[in-house]
Image (cartoon, rainbow, N blue to C red; front, side, top):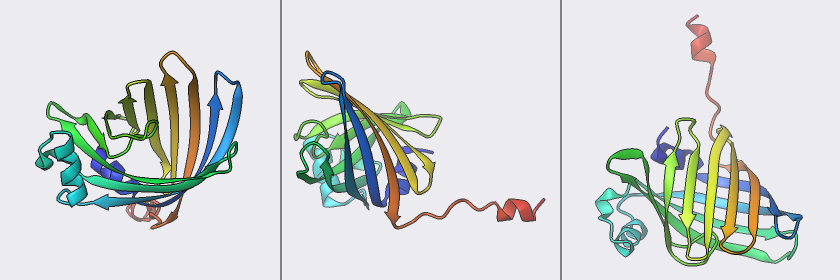
Length: 186
């Protein structure tokens, strides 16, 4: 699987449950959110604008996605919502790795370019280094409609946080691979 296939499989509506552990405070918290992931064409104005913002030729964009979320965390009960555009740009020497351009960062609310690595195990790792922190996320599919995600967030000179999310597709359901054809031919 390559990054474009991973993005395609991620398109749709998802319900996410998160457990985060704040290491410095020795406490955990739970959260829930609704995610909507929409694929964007390579020539979508948002994809072109993001490429140009980071000084990449828009022709280098592999695809684009708009991620929109709304959710709550246990500790504040406040509604958290937002949207960002993601654009992967492959390393010319290794298409399984590259830059991931973000309209809005995950840990800091500012534009940021991170790195991605698409593993041979079909897991996607996203690495983002901000001015004051480091973030690493690993995403993979347990089935077409169940996506799992782990993440770590390290603030330089401060606290760290680890999270686990299970994301269940609730819209645009992907069918399970059929074994009927294999069974019929045996």
